[in-house]
Amino acid sequence: MAQVGHLTQLHEKYYDKGLRVIAISKESTSLLQSKVVDEKGGKYWIASDPSGEYWAHFADGRVGIPHTYVVDATGKIVGEGVPNEGRIEELLANAFDPALGRDVHGMLKSAAKFYEKGQVGKAWSAAERYLEHDDREVKADALFVRERAEAYAAWMRKVTEGAIADKDYVQAMEDLKDMPKMFEGMEAAAWAAETFKTLDADPAVDNELKAWKDFEKAREKELRAEGNERKLKPAITAYERLAKKYPGTRAAGLAEAAAKRLGG
Amino acid sequence: MRLLATAAALALLTLPAKAEWRNLDGQKAPEIKVKEWLNTGRDEPDADALRGKVWIIEFFATW
Image (cartoon, rainbow over all chains, first blue to last red; front, top):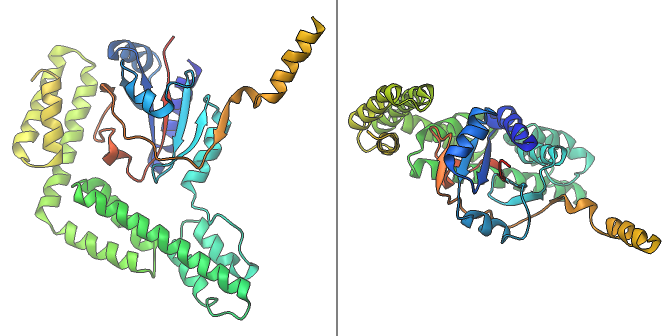
């Protein structure tokens, strides 16, 4: 299947940038395991949904398969159709590289460049001196850059606060580490640095991060067992041990579920 | 016969090129709910794991 190979490529190329690839079929997990994972080496998320209920949510059953949707970081659908590698990659490039969304006056070109390179704080600072400029166009564009930068920072902060509230500290700590540089000079940078310090000193966070490390090790054992029942035993033990060692953590909850799934 | 061929050609012209792909400024994607997952690791493919992520979702069959 052409599009399955294509999904693997996208997964490998963009996972670290924040892309998540999901493939959903009405077929059984055993068939998907053998045809997509074993034969084609698909490493992305694959789901079996025999009822087709989720598919119906997305498309009301209007269109045939294969059918692909691209969803941006705010959860909005930004493209759909018969899988088309070129168009999908185009959309992804847009979704990953922050863009101001419109041209600005020549005097704000350096601010715009900073913004497009992801140096949002530098863009914000560079635009400041034009806020009271005599030329109304320059002034409006300076305000536009400032607002875009502030909206970006606010969104990133909201996303990170959500991760903290959900005790997803792996994600939260990664974000908090990036933010001070990204939003240099802005309030969000100070907030991120401060929050990072607080979380870094919190034993509960440390506990959660350690639990994740164990979870990943157990997960590796599970993957290496390749469904072989005898080889799965150490994975089940590892899951159970971590659930006991780090009670109350997110990782423990998932480990318990994994152990149960494997018949532990 | 010629008429038919013209009609077919016209249909090809008026349909957006095989209605293949369109970019949208679309609605929120519905929260994921499926029966069973393969290849799940640290991230469970739920709203948490997708928060702030770009994702592509493909509905497919192996046949």
